[in-house]
Image (cartoon, rainbow, N blue to C red; front, side, top):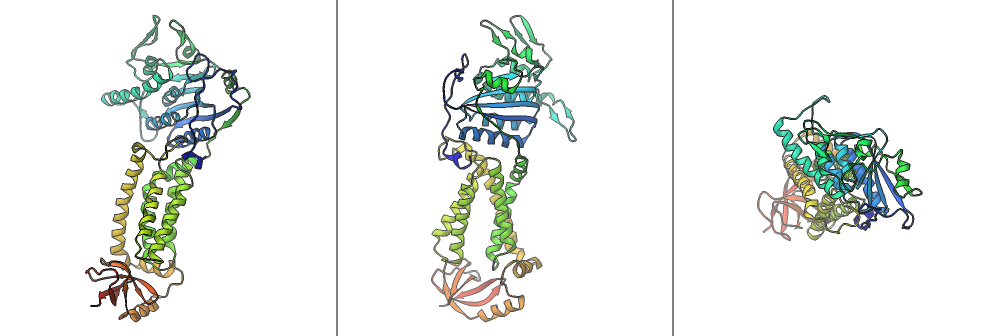
Length: 469
């Protein structure tokens, strides 16, 4: 599913009698596949990952039907908006089965599907926004805030209701206590109340021609629903929560930290000999970054692989053929592309190039992480060599590293050696001395690539050089 996500094709809508987008039950479209996604407990960020996974798997499998098995008291509005956008990516048939209750955000999400069905004695509605208090309590919103929230939520849900053919006034009465609804001379909701409907009330028909108020019918079970929709012998996939969704949420909430730790770890590793603790920390941080995106269903394995390729090219530039520039630049570009694309939400059938709205959030996250990384590197470059921790990194984290005394002796023996600058020294860079390539720095002056230089001292691990006239 992950790797196909970049290249899968969009599903074709099929129709059902009397409902746009639904196919007749008797039409032969080959083996039919149905995906059932649970909407249970509170609607919180981990549920977004579960729904995304279910939708992408359904699209990859060319599923004919996506059913939400609903039983929730509601949850966060921002998560609800994300879920509605994800559901909009699926181009097959969609339905909600209200299994007991669909309160608040659950009612909003139900409207995001083409049809709503309800179990006996189930209820739907009570969707007015409230404010969660520390410790789990709730309270009504202040009047001004309530008006603003109502306006925003009503616009969001109204667009979905209009698209799927629901009575907009009924949906708004679930949100706005000032909304009175009268149909065929019967008061459905009094002003001052928040509308909540039982299964029978939601299925009652009004108007000419008669049309259900909200629900397409009361159905005894999910199996009975699928039979009614024309999928009695379908291949069914039940998308179940794995617990990984919760893990992914917490990992992704710290994406900025993983990027900063990754950059800092690799920076220290490049500045110290051998391979040890800083490299392990850096690689682990980037691994967590890509792992969170993978579990969340945002990316596949292609982006961490591309990142590793870029890292290898940068390492070759620094340690094997310094001064070529092209390898390091190309590697850096690959790493940046991988970091950004790993958090771009893509679905089968989307164009290869992401749109600006898709890139907006990943690029903003990268900018914040880049600013943090620069600050951390500046601090490390200034203070780390002067701390006792630097000695720990150099002597214990790197393999085959000489003791401080042997290191001092080796540096003393290098004083006076002459070599050639392999890159422009401004003031830092690399120079070759015989068969050995060293990190060097000048005393502030700029020395061109190819110029001859002489070692006159050391600062930490770097040799201080001067130009030979």
